[in-house]
Image 1 (cartoon, rainbow, N blue to C red):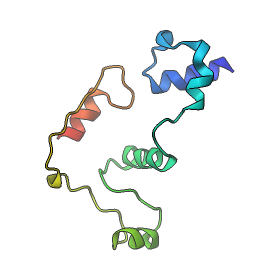
Image 2 (image 1 turned 45 degrees about the horizontal axis):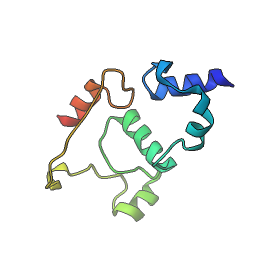
Image 3 (image 1 turned 90 degrees about the horizontal axis):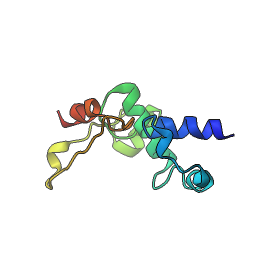
Length: 106
C-alpha cells in the first residue's frame, strides 16, 4: 500500500515526499512512532484540541485528582525552567511550523 505510506509520510514530513527513500519504507514504518509513546501523541492531540499548554488529561476528574491532586490538569509552570531553551521551526514542518512555535514562545 505505497499510497498510504506516501500519505502518512507526507502528513508527518510536511508534504514533500520527494526526499523519502521508498526502498526503506519498511524500516521507517518499523520505527514509527520512534522515540515516543502513544500517551505522548495523545497529549499532543489534547494540546491541539484545547489550545491549553497543560499536563496530560487522564480523561476523568477522578484520575486527574489521583495524579495531580485536582480534577483538571494543571498548566505547565514555565517560570520554573532555569536553563536556556532553543526553539526551532520550519516552513514545511507540520508539527513545528513558525506560527505554532511563536504561539509557544509567547
